[in-house]
Image 1 (cartoon, rainbow, N blue to C red):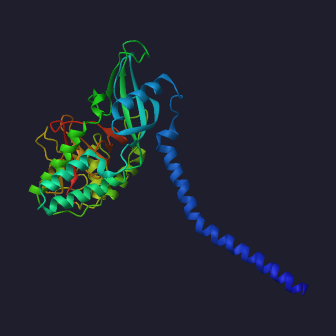
Image 2 (image 1 turned 120 degrees about the vertical axis):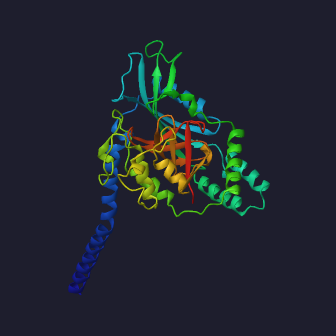
Image 3 (image 1 turned 60 degrees about the horizontal axis):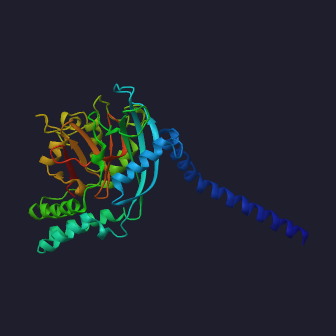
Length: 365
């Protein structure tokens, strides 16, 4: 009897050991992935890499109020973090300072159908009730926008402050320093609902009149690639350590990066558009006669020009005055977030520029 009890005890211990071994083998890949992800984020995530200004500092108080002035019509502002930013690619005066600002916000709408852009689309669908393409685009874009309802969004930006009195946030000039060309930071402000509704109506109207062949393009895969191979270095214009080493690096790498993202989304290279070709690495901005990614994608009906609110994530933007392109990673119809190279940017908010200043390109899928 005693021998049987000992045997049962040993068998039980052996059973527990086997269970532990099985658990370790199953958990190991998960633990490894978590550690690698944590390591990557700590290396390149601004929230880990640097400490923000102290809570209730004059900088934080100012930018919280400024975020409210920009977004309070459509968003609840949940948190604002402010970091010192020291650009390495330009000179600036003693009365000028740069700040990297991360804003956490959430749409105030409880349903996607409350978005002014969606309301404008619905009005157009009712107006063009015999168009199957109108209804298809309405359903497609509405489905894309549903994921933003109730979701916290984090957007980043770089602001340049010009002080009239040192470190006094009264009577200042505030500009977006996302690009070399500085523009008034108030261009980030959300437009009136009537403008957003008109954008929705015009988006559907375009698709009623245009019925080009749809492409096979994976927006999420393109965005995932974009997020993997750029960052927000606080005191550098770029951090090539996170760029994809399989591609050649250029001093002006913006179009090279956007082309990579599009390729990751499933658009196959051709005899004209392929890595290191001129069309791959040039912007194709109307500012120049040279062809590039912007002109190529439109001429081949792979991407089409639309308005700010209608551009889907996985699309891109050409800044015509700067001959610069950036990749769209998010668009809730009110605010576009983008990634880019040359000046490395990740999840940065894009200003509301008119069609003479920016071309908003959406995948034709």
